Image 1 (cartoon, rainbow, N blue to C red):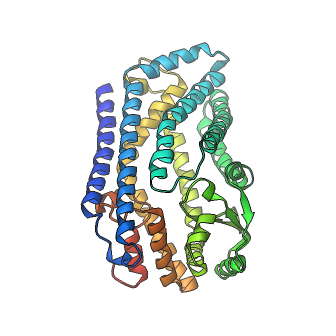
Image 2 (tube, rainbow, N blue to C red; image 1 turned 60 degrees about the vertical axis):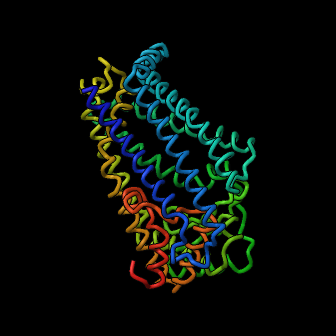
Length: 412
């Protein structure tokens, strides 16, 4: 059983690296030609920058995946997980404290192990291509705040969850799921007021006439916008974006200051029309409900499997704590669901096509949206030549060339 589980884990790891390699090789082969949809927007010098940036990001991503996957395999299958689990016996404090401490330790180890790659991406790859604007003080400050939030959330959720496991023996799976749902909704509600201000400064939009145009556009779509704000994203990166947030009927629009610098009013409104499409087509609601339904299934599956003798045997252990068993089941779940990745990506791309069509129907903005997508690709140095199989397997958005072709009324 140990050998089968290890083989499956390594098989998935090799498959992900192989697909990344194929995508990288495709970029190296095709990346020196400008797609017809972007002729006149992407000049040869920019195309060379896109190729270099795509290759650099892909190489770092593959290296990180290989290192993290190999380290995880060693931890799971070569003994460190069992040693760590036994070390937690010295924590004391009973079932809740011990298992919560186990999870808190994993959060710290995971965050620290990913720090070197995050630093390299920001101060080497992103800086090399003109995107990084963070100081090292800001980088490490963000890291410390992110870890503090992760530890706080882990402490709250794990202590509550393990308490329920201990005191609600037959129904803990249901109560844990309800805690998960409630906590998710709570974080969604408080994030704009508590979490986002820890990392970004939000200011009233100071572009003349744009806030009024945004609210008028939202009113035509039947969405009430309470505030339109500008985020100081340029303190960290030159990348640009915009998004809607909020629960219920009242929404908040957040525009990156970098987006305001790069686009015209019609292009910004076209991007927001697309985002409005996600709300009006209930994509956000449906995905939220689907996430909660998936969480329910996971809770039931864990309840049925967590005490089974085969769980620790999968990693060569005679026995394991509740928290260690959760880790093993989590890895098992990732392997089982890996083949379903293209289905989730296809669902997401379907929603993106719907949002594009809604934007055109709402505002008649096909030329402006096509222009905005071209600018976003140009300014963000987006990969213009993804391998078709890689895009089908992983991409949550259709390739930009296909979207522009569709918006111009051409066959996709």
